[in-house]
Figure 1 (spheres, rainbow, N blue to C red):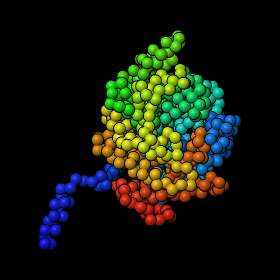
Figure 2 (cartoon, protein in one colour):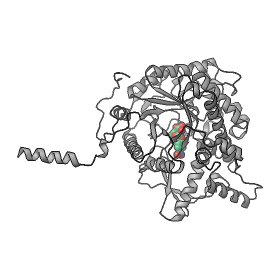
Figure 3 (cartoon, helix red, strand yellow):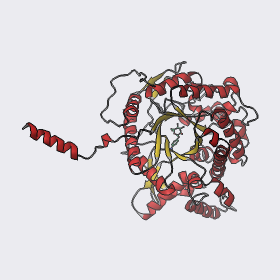
Figure 4 (tube, rainbow, N blue to C red):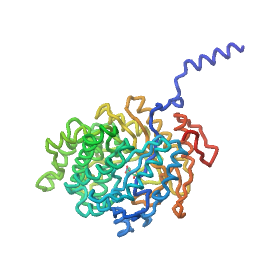
Length: 505
Ligand code: PNW
């Protein structure tokens, strides 16, 4: 009897398919978290920091922020940076992605005057991470443009490309001996479309017909200038890498009709192809079908030329290939239709140029953010598409995360993250060269127009408390377990509410 049991167990274990639970992340896969300067630092005018467009907008028109709040103090990482690094150690992070505040380093926007206090703050932050083997990954620009440069037109001024290169060079020079991962811009779509083509981010220029496209062209050229500055003058001696982070949500067809597939492709070109094509596709320049569409609509609308500028051949080849990796911020999916859910109320605009409808099934669980739902296979769909389009390039997921209202439990954040990480493993199994995953966010922070009403943190921050005390949520314990074991255990339940630092961290 006994031998029969042993035999049948052996059969089961030898021949069962490996369950999803057994899949492991590669040993060298980098787990991290992400934040951004304006959202966490505070110290908005500390030690000579210059004003930026978020300081200016929140101080002068507080009513545009849902709770009339601002980032004057935020999570006060300017004074709490050691606690931030302690949290990274508690989680066992391999890496931490954060951004530099341009006007903290260059108070008037230009590199003739460098703030020693600004440099010292980032040196302290970086050195504290390195002490504990946490790899810093720096975003040069996460939306906080010096106000003076904004008054000169910001991203719509062609000289912006030089201003950005000058700033990037200061950062490489000051920090590049220790920092080996550089991201030029965070999310061009949110910078250009939301900031210049609508009112959903500072500076709320709302020049709907042309500003997104002018910004897009200057932004990718500025990216390439900063990239080549690194490659030509720093890479040999410093040995790091430089790329850009683009928000790539998934846009699939609502039905399997040819019209809906074509509509989804146009939407992908309008949402992220505008910034990715010039850099990553062999062809160079703005995406073909979408730029033809904008040219046609501009003509019908009586504009003397396309509202979308062109790249010269020289510009095309300069920008093309200007990357060491592709940083992807991925949050959710949308289903796109050629005929349903159309809304042309903003014409002429990028939104109406694409001219398609967008739908999200109500059965996809909703976060505290109106745009953020848990969609099936979302990361897999996006990354395998990018690989097919742009070839075997190196990817990082530089953001992925879930919002809750303050005070609730964060069971849905755990569910969302586990689903996202299963999708990461599916992508790796499909051959995507994905090297790391940064969760948004390490802690609660200033969520732009939503102020403090939406919380993305693994750690809760008490914004009523002058000390800005940080407390781990359940999701922090779950992420820590995943990082430690390199496996997603869907049954794991944290049994403690206090964090400790594991040995060697
Ligand atoms: C990102 N969307 O923005 C930003 O990089 C973060 O600063 C921000 O706090 C975080 O996501 C959460 O919002 C996004 O509409 C803005 O899909 C909009 C979208 C995605 C990301």
